[in-house]
Every structure is written in C-alpha cells, then in structure tokens.
Length: 191
Picture 1 (cartoon, rainbow, N blue to C red):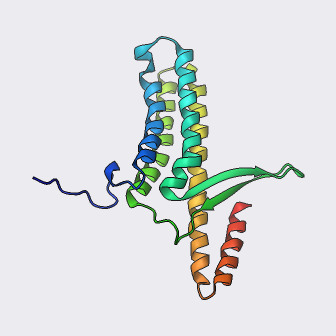
Picture 2 (spheres, rainbow, N blue to C red; picture 1 turned 90 degrees about the vertical axis):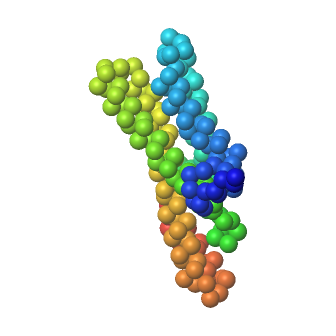
Picture 3 (cartoon, rainbow, N blue to C red; picture 1 turned 180 degrees about the vertical axis):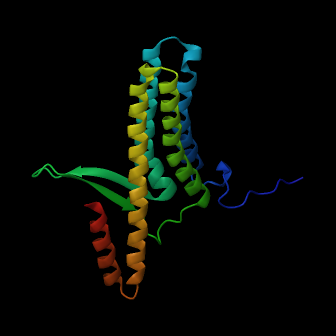
C-alpha cells in the first residue's frame, strides 16, 4: 500500500530541496534549547551547560547567517564597516528571482524556526525570573541577542528582496532599466 505524498509546502523534511541543510539548521536551532532545558539532568556543572549552550548558539548563528539562509531561502546578510569613517551598515543579498526557485517547504521551516526560537527564549526568561533562577539570565540574554539579530536581519533582507523584485519587474521592458531600479532600491535598503 502506497503512502500519500505530502502536499507541497507542508512541514515534511522529505519535501526539502536541501534536506541536509534543513536538518542541520533545525538541529542547531533545537540543540541549544535542549541543552539549556535538560543539561542539569546529566550534570550539575552549570558552567559546562553555559559554555555548551553558548557554543551551540554561536554555531546556530553562523550556520543560519551564512549557509542555511542562502541555501533554503536565497537570503544572506552581513555588516560592513567603512574604514575611513567607522560607520557600519547592514548589507542584504538575495538570489536573483529567475535563478533560484525557493522550495515552499524549506521556506516554511525556515521562517517558523527563525521566529519561534526567540519566543522560546523569551518564555524561558520569564520562567527564570519567576522561579528566581537569575543565574541563567545572562545566558538567556545572549541567546536573545543572537536569535533576534538573525530574525531582524533576515526579515529586513526579505523585505529588501521583495522591494528589489518589484522594482525590477516594474522596469521589465528593458534590462538596463530593471538593473538600475534594482540597484537603486537595493542601495536604499542597505543604508
């Protein structure tokens, strides 16, 4: 008897265009929470749990920012510093609309995971405050900074991508005009 195939865009990792990237991304997203929540069951060493959780959060931040975002949804961001003035600005990059087709399943997993993790850390902060476990608040603060930074950056990157695509399609009559419009919109959102 053949099992029914899940619909496109449903939350089944088997429909992913990049299953290894997706599973690694989800593994990093979940592992820091699991170590934080269940680490005390395996050891009484708070410092070890703190360090392992920080390392997993850093690996998640790097993997999401540089690998998973680019492969799963075609988005990437970074921060540049002008050496002469010292001013920093964020740069957003998206794949060209015609070159990469974004898988609906990859996109759903990506956006759900990117917005859910900060909510979990906020809930854990509330639990830590009401249970008087203030020793965990610095770790939660670091987790919130890393996860919210990625959430905000990818949200802005997605908005930049959509605005750039709209501007490019508005001037679709000529390749030069579309390129100029995309670059103008792109510069507007990077400053």
